[in-house]
Length: 181
Image (cartoon, rainbow, N blue to C red; front, side):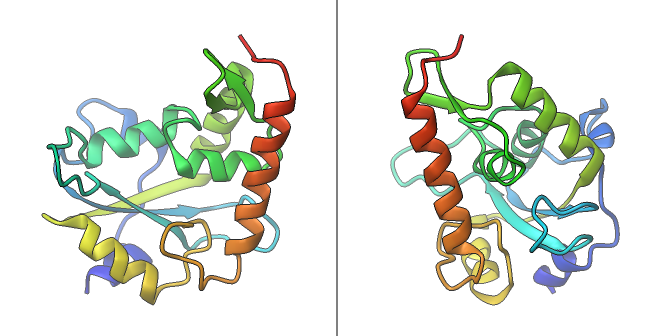
């Protein structure tokens, strides 16, 4: 039932709808799923669930302030340092990863992140379900579904090694470049 709500959602939401005020995304715990009108890579299918994420993540030692609304909105307008989804999409789209700030964080820079945000606004759609312990559901979904953009807990996926390698190459190239302003 819960997987169906993400795989074949009644409704998908666009960046414009998500960022409107009030946002339709609840400020609650849950799992969100990303579908793409245009896939970020030729070997991936359009118009299907490619990634699931959770908010908050499980934290044994403290309480997370994250919720569905904050996470989904961040994926649409944040940067690769704070979003593994954005990092994967940017790498698949061939954007140049750069070290920023002190050099420890990596993003696609102001211009690259803007390109990625525009691409996501044009192509990425999201759905969600509320769930009090989303980390349990996330593990089940990753084990049961074909989610090529999820890396964590997903070594069994056919796309896993290619995506992991692309991200590693992007990080290595970023380390060889000067820190970006």
